[in-house]
Image (cartoon, rainbow, N blue to C red):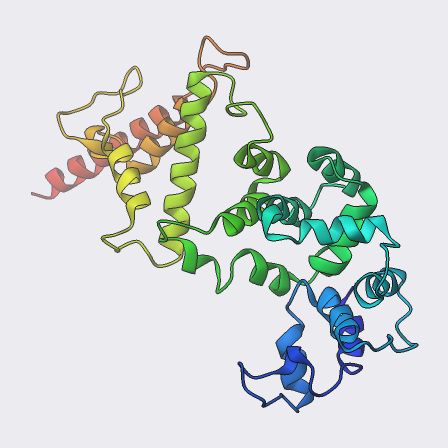
Length: 316
């Protein structure tokens, strides 16, 4: 359901709709902009729309032609035996006892390159139930192009808000994992993927950890958290950078600690560090690092410096 259709459905809701209630009082929003703002960013608006009419014992307006909305209304609004087993499965997912499965499902639905068939297989659910759940309860696929809407679900209040938070809600952690890293990360965090990691060797584990530490530190710096004493991620990164690397052959090092341990620039040290994160000699895909460009530039710079010193000495 896209935003245009939501705007149309909001106009069909009664003025004393619970969705438009201010707190627990009897005051209801009466301006169209207020009403739209209250619901337009709710992923579960389609379900809330259906339940509003069902709870009142009212039929859906004739302009509501979506089959899934009418089937859901019949399920929640008409007494008697269950008529739709798919909608019943969706209702089962919404129960508190299935909160974690619901969180996993939401995180997989937010991933851009997954299909409903894949999600259904991973979670042992009927494909029809996954489809109706997404349409009713977690409306993201028809609104994927609305970046602010998706960002509001994955990063409520913005990414920077969550950069220095020690404990993130599990539901939100899964959503962020799905949006940033994809379905495999969600399955691994949820315990559905038995692989300990995507990296098959200790060296690759180390590279993955280092890359994530670097990425996290850069994101924290970009979000304005660089100078926070409580920024644990930056502290870990400082420790990593303080470890004295071994200088490449042909480059002397001194006794200082950290990146300053090398008599070459920080940019060169970073390049060397990143090269060290590539496949090692005992791993497939290994390629001998080439530092000739660095060494050539150092020679050029030294030559320029010597000529400048000679020029200055000639003036005295």
